[in-house]
Length: 256
Image (cartoon, rainbow, N blue to C red; front, side):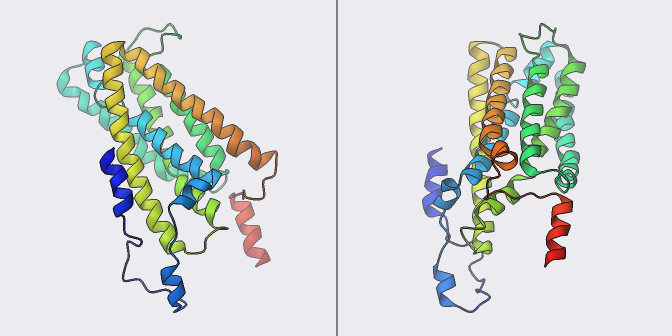
């Protein structure tokens, strides 16, 4: 974690240092876009938190899932196929989510994806509250849904951040550079925090309790995101929000 924090201070102001400003202005090259802008904007901050928490709720299974599957009767050598399963649904779901975002508002996609993430984790355990007995088929189906939900959490986030701050800054090249840096850092941090906390929690309690906790994390964030992002978009008509359906995109092109 200290390495991640230190990386913030050692980041170059630009990744593509040889890029010259298109307007030829020397002022544009010195007016650097600050990382703090991402955290001052509400929608950008929510998107960054979504990246971190979805990573945590996905990668926490790494140190504990294989052991649980072996307890359920799966051979140790075959557990790798289970990890490949939800990685495959993640890969397949990513372009599907990109297509859906042409017709459905990105914030709705993110909200639904976090809800699916929470539900899938409840059945991976399965949750003690549900009163179901653990089984390999149930775990496989739930993990497949988990991969799809993570794709829905990841794919819309770049566009969401760009749209959220485009009214504040016009230096798109620097924005893209810094989003890439932040996403890499948050992915690494989530990959660190998830397995570390899940391993300790499972040792102290059980696999089912651990999956319940991370399901609760996903559900709580979905609730927060609904209140802070989805409600302003549809009910409060926040001027900082924009629709991104295909119909609205066509209307914009026609007016231009």
